[in-house]
Image 1 (cartoon, helix red, strand yellow):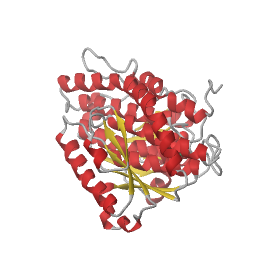
Image 2 (tube, helix red, strand yellow; image 1 turned 180 degrees about the vertical axis):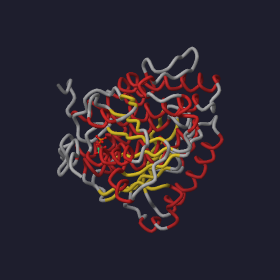
Image 3 (cartoon, protein in one colour; image 1 turned 30 degrees about the horizontal axis):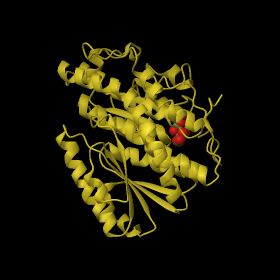
Image 4 (cartoon, helix red, strand yellow; image 1 turned 90 degrees about the vertical axis):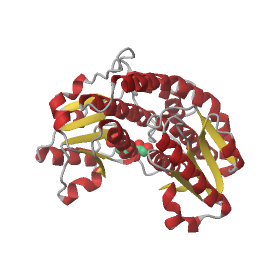
Amino acid sequence: EKAGYKHFMLKEINEQPRAVRDTTLGRVSLDSGQVFLPDLKLSQQDFQNATSMTIAACGTSWHAGLAGKFMIERLARLPVDVDYASEYRYRDPIPGSLGLLITQSGETADTIAAQAEMISKGTPTLAICNVVGSAITRKAQGVITTNAGPEIGVASTKAFTAQLTALFTLALYMGQQRGHVSSEQSKHYVDELAKIPLKLEDVLRSVDDQCANLAKTFSTANDFLFLGRGIHYPIALEGALKLKEISYIHAEGYPAGEMKHGPNALIDETLPVVCIATKDPADPTSVLKYEKTLSNIQEVTARSGRVIAIATEGDEEIGNLVEAVIHIPAAPELLLPILEVVPLQLLAYHIAVRRGCDVDQPRNLAKSVTVE
Ligand code: F6R
């Protein structure tokens, strides 16, 4: 049932090209650039009248929500708040015009409670969910199914990249409904989305050995830092969470620009720092962010921190600044997260295996958290 893989987690990491393809299939037209999400059951008027959106989720799904905020704000020009579901209902929240729950299982108690809170306040809820017929999909007005297939490993991998894919299609759909993306832009985005599965296959082929080698060097570290800016910051959080939950190494994700406001004090020659330093050369804001990230990297190396950079193919100069570079294929800024999380998953996996941890069943964790 593990199809020749040593662990479910590794099998599921390798299933990501298929998971992303199946989450896109039938929902986009390569000819027109149009997105089709008939199960949302909201009218164009509903999307046009919306003034804000509230996302609630837990753990890895919350990280997807943080990345989704960048996609929806950029493509649909709608302000988005992202909440931990476990915090949401305990402060008499003010929901946005639309609610969105993101959940692999559809059975997470905190996320169910956040949805109930939204519904009780008259807010229509949408769900991005991997399990058809689960509790959250039954209560939602509209659903986007992530067709990742059953996820057995406790650490979420393919469900996460499928969530990012679903969020991208939702953002593009909302952008179209609200009149903020032209048909030319839509075609470009749909075209780029359709290329992601092959690029994922590329990443899986090219980075696995490198991650296994880095694991040899870094598996005895006591702490890890993961840095990113903009949409790459949620991916830094996800990289840190993967490492924590399966290898039991303390890890933190941080916005790269915040380091100088305190955490730089942690850096010494024993600290591995994984920096997401990818860029989309066609996107000026992405390039600007990249340049700022490079100066953050220099701040880390000046304090003897050991930097592992995740960079875009063709960026060779960054190799002069850091100890190791993992290259991923180029893509538009909003799609890069789907590619850049893969080396972080593999790094966590190989480190955990080296440390003799039970990768598929980490201590103290359950696949689905059905108590609050
Ligand atoms: C981490 C992980 C958890 C879940 C969280 C939410 O790898 O799997 O953080 O993401 O418990 O679960 P769902 O998405 O089922 O609501």
